[in-house]
Length: 196
Image 1: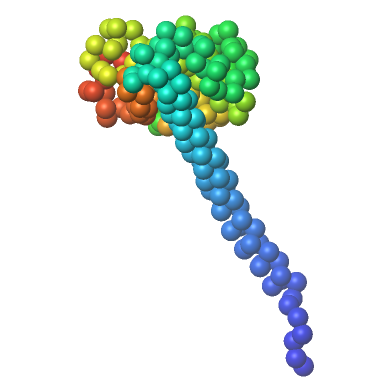
Image 2: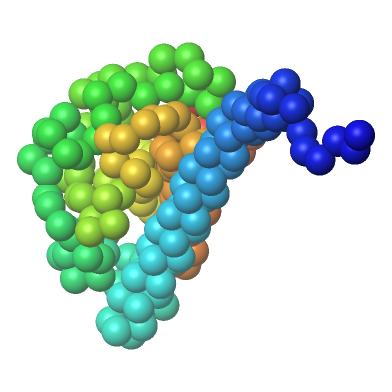
């Protein structure tokens, strides 16, 4: 007699194999989606910062950052050119930065209360990212063309809270250009703090 279907054992084995494959692939798929989201938000923030600096320089008919007025009034610049949802009084205010950050490799890096950005005004944007903008002092500018430093947590206090994932540091230069700071470029900016 001909066999017309599958046995219960064959169906259960097939379902088990499908379940194992799903259990193995779904976490990596979820991680990849999360990483793509962080990458997209980082690119968007970088583009928005670059466009804001360029627009401010153009509107003030300035050929450099100093003449644009940004270094003297960074708060006015941020409120005028970014969609600010909240201005935090302190970095550890709820909804602003995370309490603790880790290095790219996952080691504890620093507590937000002792970061070199302390004293700068943190801003929460409508997309959930949080950032500091700080004009560098003369000693920090001595060996560099950088005029300001920006530290941004692309997704605010949400995890992973790691440098190179959702926490980035960028520099604004006198000509209005923006550049991400990386540890391999430390010799170019010896007097400026960096996130390790």
